[in-house]
Image 1 (cartoon, rainbow, N blue to C red):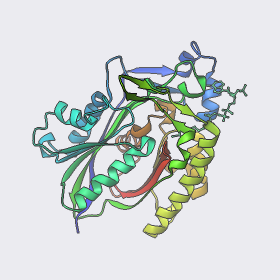
Image 2: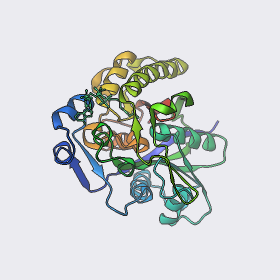
Image 3: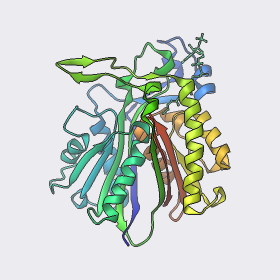
Length: 320
Ligand code: COA
């Protein structure tokens, strides 16, 4: 049986770091309000002209280097993004070109907003397990700052830009142990950006809309349920998990979910304070942070979990 394992991780944050205090100079908010409700202290914002593909390429190069894999060996690229460079072609094709990969590997985007990286990782795993690919670049990359109304304090303080990537390769040893992905389109109305390109204009609002309290309630319940489910499927308990790499939307959602799952706080990688919510980039950014600072070690059992617009959510158990 062919398995898939993470061979290397990488990430990239735009240079510009914007603190809560800096935001408070332009919108009616404060560091105290933002930090106490979300755990966010700062976020990184892409420079004008810097696109999701630019962030993705930087993260991908770091992951390839860590994996000791040449770009020419890649036979599948999946980019999870809700902020593609263009309506089409896929950002994955733009990334392929920027990386100089000319071997006609498969390349496409996955759109599951903040759950996108998990959807992309599971898809790459299936490609590898079926023998259709041997080395995949799986990337989460976002410029969510471009979807924000910077006068709307309810949303503009929450998000940031960035990218994270992994090289997933065929292996004799199991890497991805269990995964559950779910979606429920009946909740599209509580978190969305309705605008689309149509008939020569942007049709509907181009800004992110969120009912924060409804999202909060849905998120904690859904993540606790799916976390338990994936542990049951793998026949393991919370004690068997070495590290949790959650989607970094909000510190309170992360803490509440961990409590439901019986996971001790020191096992959780938290990057939301410095990254804000980077949507599809948040899990691979947190994963790379944990790998590079030594908290995540080879052989560790990891739980990845996250949720976002759709609603779409999931949980994955990995042997790193
Ligand atoms: N600064 C200061 N005040 C703010 C503010 C800000 N950035 N944003 C909202 N407020 C105000 C509101 O206007 C409201 O004031 P009012 O009572 O005078 O109308 C008050 O704070 C309370 O707003 P509310 O929306 O009820 O706050 P909350 O306690 O629910 O916190 C969130 C808001 C967004 C932090 C919280 O709902 C949350 O974390 N939701 C989940 C969001 C999330 O993670 N989304 C991504 C999922 S992928």
